[in-house]
Length: 66
Figure 1: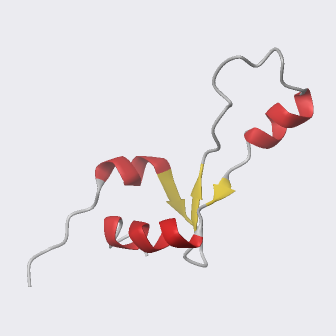
Figure 2 (figure 1 turned 90 degrees about the horizontal axis):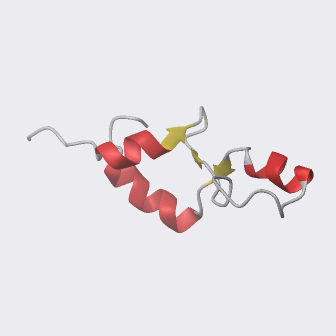
């Protein structure tokens, strides 16, 4: 059986936790920050867990990270 290829775009954007869950950066943190509250900006900086449906796809994209 041939080797499986890792999706390099997904590898750069997602991190796998010890319990095999995927973390990603949240959107809306890059620009137009003046109208957003400090609390909102702070929380957007924290990584977010990928949804169940996305995790299923990510398992095939990142076969060796699990």
